[in-house]
Each structure stands twice: as structure tokens, then as C-alpha cells.
Length: 298
Image (tube, rainbow, N blue to C red; front, side, top):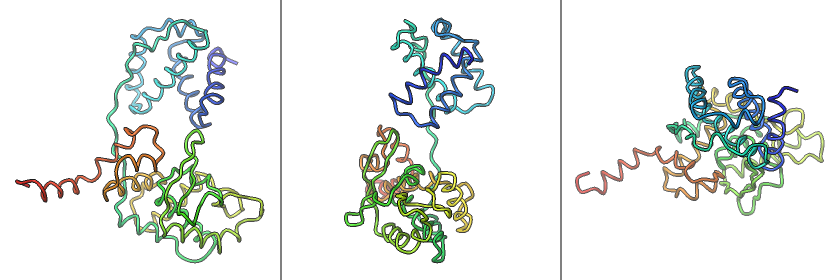
């Protein structure tokens, strides 16, 4: 085990056990921190403690020269800041070298969204009554009806849909539970799949996963991504559609039709409302229409 690995192992174990970070996040943090430690030649907590703000600035500038995106640089600095705070809390160092270093502010990227007409075409793309088509129809309806992340939809179990009250129970980041309303169209699609599709896919009756593959296993995010891409192409929708596009479209269309920001935040499962505010850009045409209709000189 390298010196960098010895430094990172207790931190990553802490992130997994105490912070509940996902395997993907842990992998990204490990990769980012290994790159940082290797680039600056840091192999111990004491060497990390002695870093100056000037060295951190040079590291950031080097990342930018390599063409890394602002989001990637920011993520690396967040991981580094978490590591330094952990080492201080655990008594390995006395000073946090990142304490006075300001993380660069980023321009928020406007998310790509589909029009309501494009969503309708996409939802109608799975045609036929085969188990796979019934599953995919229910899958797309649930993605758009709930605004859930791909991992949340893949994680749904048959008992997570309440057909009487029209809610789905989703488990978000760090297994945080939330209830999301589900519309009648999505509920009907899921009922049809449960009645006529899932029984023909389920080889093990003890399985609780809602969305199953051809082999009867829980659907993975990769499979979900491929199914969304396939049906988007069939529907003639732009090529870069992915599961998160439906999440963005869900939030955008809700706000565009008059939903309040706080309600959308709760449905998306955002811890901070500033994350949800990115979607307030989307309906400039509606704002313009309101201005024209109500302003004395509109």
C-alpha cells in the first residue's frame, strides 16, 4: 500500500460509515485525492498540513490548463477540504491548509430539458404488449411522473407504489426517504406492467424489485440509460436524452405550469433550495407573457 493509500484509507472508511456516501462518490473522491497527492508529492498528513494557499492555487491553475471542467476542479477541492477537516478532527494534524482557500465559484449550467411535446412522444415510444414494452412504458412514465433519479427508479420495489393514494416512496442520496406524488397515467402504466408484464419476467417469486430485466433481475442504471436512449431515438427526440433529462424536464414543466419552488424541491429531494433554483430560468417565455399581460407598458 502506497503512502497516499495509507493516508486516504481511514478517510474513505469514515465517508462510507459515518457520512453514508455512495460507492460512486467514494470512488470519485479516492481518484481525485490520489491525483492531488501525487501531483503535489504529498505522502503524509504532516506534508499535507504544510501546504500553502499558493500551492493550492497552482494546482487549480494546472487542472484548468489540462482542460478539466469547473465542476471537476470544484469536486476535487471539495474532496480535499473534507480530507483536511477529517484529519484535524481525528487529531492527525492541527491546521487545515484549505481553511483560508476559497473554492472557485462556478456558473450554473442550464440543464437540458425536453418540451412537453417531446416528452409525450418519448412516453408513447414503447409500443406493443410484450413484457419489455409494458415495463419500458411504465419505466418512462415513472421517470417523468416523479422526477426521480435513475438509481431511485431502479431501486423501487413493488411495495413502494401506493395506488390508492397515488404516491411513490423513493430512497435518495444517503438512503433518505421521500414520498412523491404519481399521476394517473403513470399509475395505470405500472398497473398494466404488474398485471401483464412483470409476472412473465419474474423467475423468482421472492424478488421485490419493481423493474426487472429479461433475466428477472433488478434493472441497473446502465440498462435504464440504454432503454431511455433507445426509445428517445425511436421517438425522434434529440440524441442526448438520458434519464436525468426527464428529471430536469419534470422540474421545468412543474415550475412552468405554476408550481412553487419549495414543492418542487421536496419532490426532487434537494437538501438545499438553491439546487432547485437552477430550474427557475426555464420559463422566460411565460414570464415575458406575464409581463406583457400585466405591465402598464408591456
